[in-house]
Every structure is written in structure tokens, then in C-alpha cells.
Image (cartoon, rainbow over all chains, first blue to last red):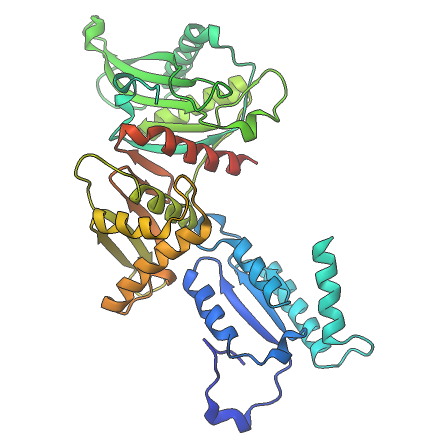
Length: 131
Length: 288
């Protein structure tokens, strides 16, 4: 399910399936997308931040079009205890690899991988970031 | 501050195309006249090969290389190196008839980040600025690349860096009446690309920056963000357009103007070292 901002319209709440993972997409070329994500974060229930949220920064292939300070995005990830992934959607290989990675995360968050919970997975990712 | 305004006057009010240059190997300051002769011969040879630069009147290209000791940040920086190409029509032989056709200069202003890590025999002049026909730029560039084993790359300026520049330069104190602060945006992914130009009264821009900046002489990313957000919010209030979603492509202030393709024009000699220091930093980060 894709939305341009949060909160989601309440009229369709009863029709919506359970949400297992929220991916916030930030376009490195658009400061507006970062502001939009920051504003939307306030509408997410705190329980999601136990491993069911991740930030996806797109457009990183074009360094010369960068409008966002990437360290600010990393700080956002730290503040919300959620991983930050960087990708370039215009390159097919990276697009496919990123999709597979997100799918894997989704499987974990939906409880489909025995022995790995969303919380244990995200703390594993954070440990490797610190290294 | 030591720069003699007479000597550096030629730098002002010209559109310079920016490049980053990796350190030059085996460059010796004492050999400038030799280098000028060799470069001149190279250009003449390339023209003979048919890489004609100008069709029509046969022109001899004279090359002059000189050092600009004043153009540097500290004693740790190399003095700037100026390359000038002038043409003399074969019809006349008087040197007063030399017409400058192209100029380029290498410089380093507080480029310690690069020079402190470089081995012996390497000269660090990471920023290159050229003015004149692209064909001459590529001839001079090829000669330097072959002779000193260095690499030139066009220096693009990201919207993030352009916003630093406009915040810094809009806040500069100027004794003369300043020109407007202008921001140019492009919105590409529409059926017809839209270009937006946003002009701000220079005193308003400076007043805004003065309320944002906390420590004089120091600028943080947060302060630049607040400054830009104020400008974007003001524009949105009037036109309902989110400039933060568009691409900032060019900025102009009374101090200098800069375009994302890596073209700058420096308008005020007082701030020349500051502008060059920022550009040197960008060149070094492109190299590393």
C-alpha cells in the first residue's frame, strides 16, 4: 500500500489489512520529501518503532543533485531507532536488490521467519551499523 | 586580505567554469617559461592535425604561464598558477596586438586537507577555473594531464552546496548597494519543464540571515536549513508551490553567483578569498 503522507484516511480503516512494515521514502533530490516524512512520523504509533519502520533514501546515484544533508537522515534513523537504507531506483540491479531486502524485512516483521522477531532483527542491524 | 586588487581584478565579473584537479606530479615553478613554450608547441601541433579551433583568419596562439603569489589561503597553499592564451594575427607582429582568447588558473585556498597527505614531488592545486572556448580548455587540460599525470573533472555544485553559498553570501556585509538575492529552480518532471526565479531584496535576505546565525564567523547546516525553510515558506504562502521539492540550479548574490553545472562569477574582491576557500573545499571533496 502506498501513501503520499500520513495519516491514512480513516474511512478505509476497517478495510485495511494489518500493517507489518512502514517504509518511509526520502528522495535525496527533494527537501520536501524529508519534511513530509518528518511530519508523517508523528502519526505512527510508537509500537511500530520496535523494528517495523525503516527509512529508504532514494536517488543516491546522483550526488550532484543532492538537496538533503545525509547525516540529518542518519540522525533521524537513530532518533527513531530504525534502519536507514540507501538506494538508487534508476539502476535496475540496485532496485531489485533493494526490493528483495525490503521483502525479507517484511517477512520478518510479519512473523513469517521462525526464530527472528522484528525487534531482534533491527537491533542486529543497529549493532552492525555501529561497528 | 593581502591580495592586490589590481592583480586580481581580472578574476572578477567573469564566468569561470570549475574543475577539480588531482595533484600534479613533477611540476616545477622554476620552469614556467619552458612549460609555456611546450604548451604553445602542443597547441600549434594539434591545430596542424586539423583540430582547428577557429576557422578563418590564421591565428598564432601565444601561451603565458605566471604565478599569483597573492592567491592562496596560507603559506601551506601553493601559489596560484595562471595560464593565458592570446592570439596574434599573422598579419601584424607587434605584441601590443595580442588579444587574450582564453585564460585558466589553478589555485588552492586553505587546501590543507589534500596537501598534508600527499607524497613528495606532488603539487596540490585542486581548483581549476577556465574562461574561454571549451576547445582551448580541452587542449590545455590534455597537455597538463599528459605532462603532470593529473586528472581534470568538471566540478558540479549540488543544491545542498548552492544553499550553503546563498546563505553565506547573502549574509555578507557590503558597503555598496547590493543587488537582489536570486534563486533559480527547475521543476523537470512535468510535461513542460518549469523554471522558477525567486528574487529577494538583499537587505531582507541579510536581515533574515542575521536572525538565524548564532555565532558570527561560524555557519552550521541547521542555520542554512532554517534560512532556506523561511524563504521556501514565504514563497509557499504566496504561490502555494513547494520550492523544497524543486531543484535549486542557480543562486546569485552581490558577492558571487553560482550555477549547478559548476560555473561561478565572483563580483566582489573583498570576499574573493572566502569564495575560493569554499570552492577549493568542493574540489577537494570531489577528488577524495
